Image (cartoon, rainbow, N blue to C red; front, side):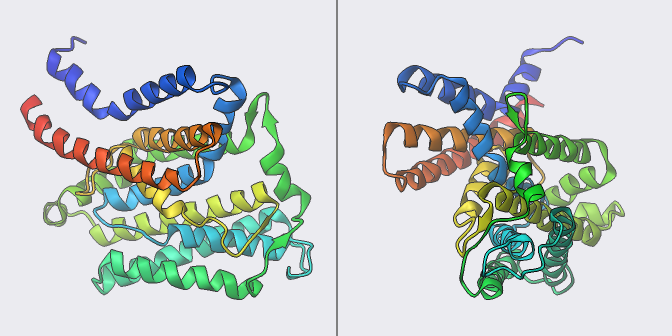
Length: 326
């Protein structure tokens, strides 16, 4: 097929985050001593796993023109429940359940929380910002109640093994993250549900008129967000071989930043998971660079905020340019 200049421009606009990621990695590799090595690149992907999976669920909600602020607390609660049910320390339940049975339990829990959020948002027409903010507070507190504010350690070996297995030089956790991204990329680009997510986010009224079951799409987005958050929590418990009262703290803002940096518009109906993936890797690479150069970690919040502002400005610019390329 022949491509004209407008096709090339549209492709460049759709993939601008990848150009930014490549440029940032190049600058870090050249400018920071010790950055350009396989171990560092491996760690960038490894540390992006949890935020990366959270960001998929957040992206589904934002593409639907909603928002899920509870993802971090669902992750934290899932990690706490995993540790509580499979841990061997004094503050655990003592049940020592099989790790993969526990995975099923926390995924079901995540789906239930998503259903809870969806009920208030879809059926009672309450703002997703308000409901998921309330869920954020409630389920973070529930995690503290479960363990009485204590950490739990020494999980069953099959749980910990998930974070320690490698396929050659690539950690299993990274393989899982990439597989989840690939699955949901197919869902969004090849299924009716995925097409409806974009349509609902673009125009609720047009979606209703087209016969799309908007309520079903929104319920699906929030349930999947809960399931993905719970999966990330189970994997995080495996990685840390336990849980602590504040586990996952701050990941909401990182996931949100990855989504916005990745080109998902807050206006809904626009965005690709390939961009969200690049956004998560970009944040992880920047955090790694900050650590290597010895900057205090709180500088990372300034950088994240700067990235979000730049991403929003780019989104506004692209929204003006795109109509000219039709």
